[in-house]
Length: 337
Image 1 (cartoon, helix red, strand yellow):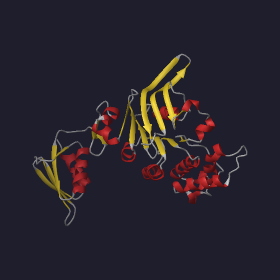
Image 2 (cartoon, rainbow, N blue to C red; image 1 turned 60 degrees about the vertical axis):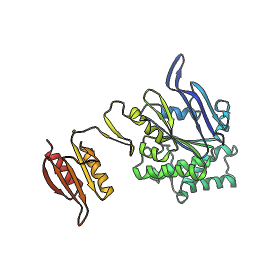
Image 3 (tube, rainbow, N blue to C red; image 1 turned 90 degrees about the horizontal axis):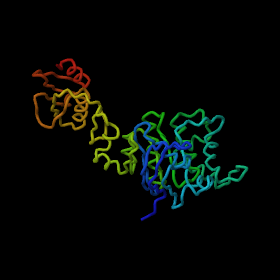
């Protein structure tokens, strides 16, 4: 079995000011292997960014050890560390009057001479980094003219040009719309799966983390850390414990989603030969406070799609016909007592 590229052993993170020590989280231990993608998740203020800053050497650990390729992080010089580890932070970097190629070239700084002149090998690394994020066609564009999604891919390219053993990203999908969040996560997953990059990133997007990560590092508001495959953490009920301590939401462990706890105490039985339509009809009923059951009950909805989509509803001993979920939902809201 291959050795891990990153080893975290009994790590405590937080802040030290003179005699005052603020411990955010402790007893953190995990390994990162080649080709693995780990997502760090948790509520705001749980310590996700502090953990990443500690791993990158930007912040000293309170205790514990961090090893990169079996070498102690604390014993490595900044220049040596820069050749093994690359970082993309949340904050937008103010870059103007530079082309995309210029920005990505900055990733080669740890390898250039004091004049900063790029060799043929450096140019090859830059071009390859742009190709890995499908950004080569942006090479001559001014960075200030890019969309947020394009800009983030460029910053990832800059990190890749550094030719790192480990890539660390703090909230790489922050400020992006959903399609671009998906694209960035798909790009990072591809870098791990197809190019053997070892990646750790923090994110608030639980659904994308669950569907993308090989493992999750979950930190709750008390600093308690859980580590494991997303599926293991779901089966252990840890998502509800971490993100829903006050029971204000309901977590669906089958599709890993949260929704408001607005249950009316009334049941509905939905039937259809169209599995997708049945699923989303049930979702709509749950959204407005009804429980859905697999067995027949007093209130029921029957969906058919021929000749047109139709929802036949029996509710409070009344039968009605609807041709959209919106119409069905409005009817139930208006008639619920």
